Every structure is written in C-alpha cells, then in structure tokens.
Amino acid sequence: MKNQIEHIGTIQKIAGDTAYVLVEQSSACSACHAKASCTASDSVEKIIETQIVGDEKFHEGEYVKVIGERKLGLLAVLLAFVFPFSLIIVVLLTLNAVGLPENWSGTLALASLAPYYLILALFKKRLKRQFQFYVQKIEN
Image (cartoon, rainbow, N blue to C red):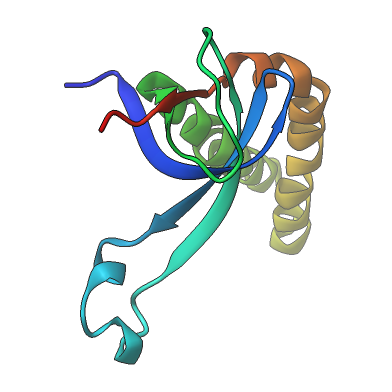
C-alpha cells in the first residue's frame, strides 16, 4: 500500500517556492456518459498550496502531480469530523446527565464547537507546517 496521496492538477500561480495547484475532485460517477441527466455526479475544484522542492523549474499552466502523506489525510479527518462530533456527544450527554433541559443541552453542545475551532485557529501555523503537500513533474 502506498503511503502517499497523489492528485493531478494544473499550476495556477507560483510565488517563490510555493505553487498553487488547481485540482479537480470528482465522484466516481462524474466520468459516466449519463452524468448530464444524473444528479449524483459532482466535481469540485480546489486550489492546494504546495511546496516546490529540488531544482526542478515549473511554470503556470503546467500539469503536475500533487503529493501528500496518507497519514495526514487520517489526521485531517480526525480533526475535522471525529473530534468535533465526539465533543458534541460528550457535552450533550454530560449536560443531560446533570439535568439541564434538552434545548439548553443541545445549544451548549453546539456552542462547545466554538472553543474547539478557536483552538484549531490558534494552531493554524503549526498545522500548516505539518500538512505539507509537494509538487512533482509528471513523467511522460
């Protein structure tokens, strides 16, 4: 099993040793011949900030490969979905056990996300250093 996640994209902008790559993420059925009449197909374009390493020269409009570590994908899912969901459930169950009315428990459980995302925002620079993506030329 590969320990890397790879996507093909187009360089939109280069600034120093950073390349901004446009990657199209699409569902498996978006390539289907019947996608025009189907509501299940979807695709989203995202710009990924990548690092240029080595002596290779890149230019805007070039097709490249964006590479990231697979374990970072798991960490991203934990930070974005699992931890916030767990926090809501724990706060909700705790406040219900204390005897707070359900409407207050639900509101406070949702409000508990504000400090969580504030803490993530405070560690933004540290997380950005950890979530590094690299750009690589596509071999012909």
